[in-house]
Image (tube, rainbow, N blue to C red; front, side, top):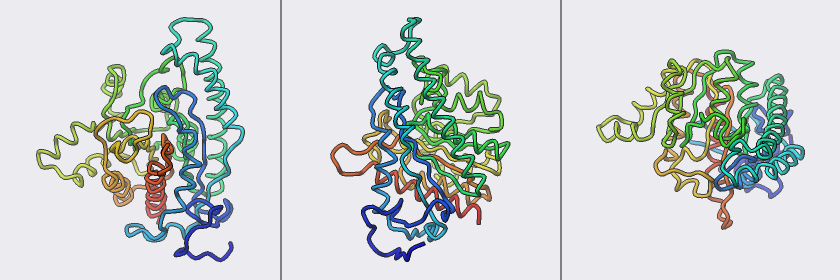
Length: 342
């Protein structure tokens, strides 16, 4: 590794967080997945990984909670050209379905949706195989989207390595819809697909949820406790009655097993922190609430074995606000994942 000064300004073409590490040197490797084919409201998440990379160079590397995560080595893989090509093709096919709000039994629209699903299965396979390879080399792996659909392959790879895996899911939405708008792999169906298709995931704990349909509510209530959802409104009401956030984080962490994967949709935060994300909902977590929740996992003695960050959409006014927040959440995820292994 070349000489590096953590106190100096980052060079424009430096690596993630301004670091010089290669994927071979780094303990933490980030996998960018620029894919957003089924996004139906707003757009731009496919540019999230590149925007976070740029914004990350403005993050100071010393952290008062976790110290010096950068010393372990952090690297981001190059933007994958194949995934970008699949996204563009899938988006073209999805546009016809999205404009109609679903397939509605129309053979042409059903064929278009099937084409989108085929591209998404390729993306899932690429993410899974890439993450599996990095895990086999002893890396801590974080996946950076893209819309929330990109998480499936990463979660599957981690669950294969850690049977009984628990998921901590931060989001405004439950993401438990079945084939939303006709797409089996919709971003709104990611957690349904995980729970239906990956039996090695033993527990799903959802935090910040404030937007869901009846079908999702029924899936939660019929899960036999495998899905435990902490609704934003109920958490807020309990705080109004005197429960502290610290007490709430203990309640939320308690159901999780020892090995935890964090899947973090940026719209789980207060929309003031992510005004350009596609499906923002009033309410949500402050930055400090979110990072203290992640910290609570590590401080409880559990291991954060992997994580993803999705739905970050670059600010259209050039302010880099959303990606700035995203980069800082990402650094906290990295820092606490490392600390949980210490």
